[in-house]
Amino acid sequence: MPLVHSHLPAKMASLGFHRVDNMPHQYKLAAIASSLASKIVYAEGVNFVKSQPAENLSMIAMRWIEVEKEMDDLADTIDGSGMDEEVRERLKDLVKRGGVRTSLNIF
Image 1 (cartoon, rainbow, N blue to C red):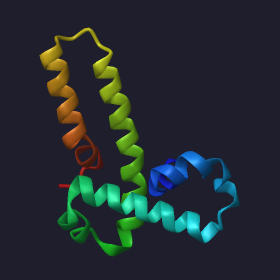
Image 2: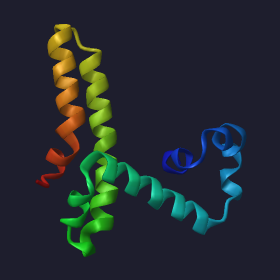
Image 3: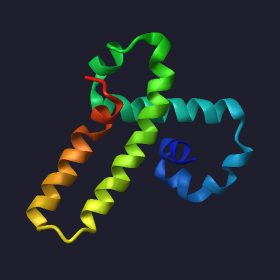
Image 4: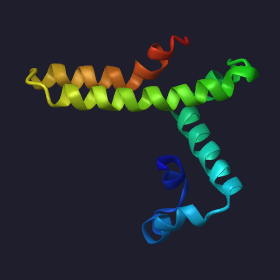
């Protein structure tokens, strides 16, 4: 539950994340929704969210988090490659900044 973990204040997460199973289900859902919304708005901007059809937002959000993980894995693969450091850093930057939205084919 990385989205729940990222929602909690650092001290609370370090002291009590192991007890997350005892949290009320509605609180977990609220924490996940809040964390996911924050991540998307921070990465893509408010206008990105506003421009999406309301009926598609939940599907887009769930797909966005999956693709973000794929882009993180791809950046790690690039980082571990034997490419020239300057090229490697440039590719990682491109993947991190544009990979999710491009993979989702949303412009």
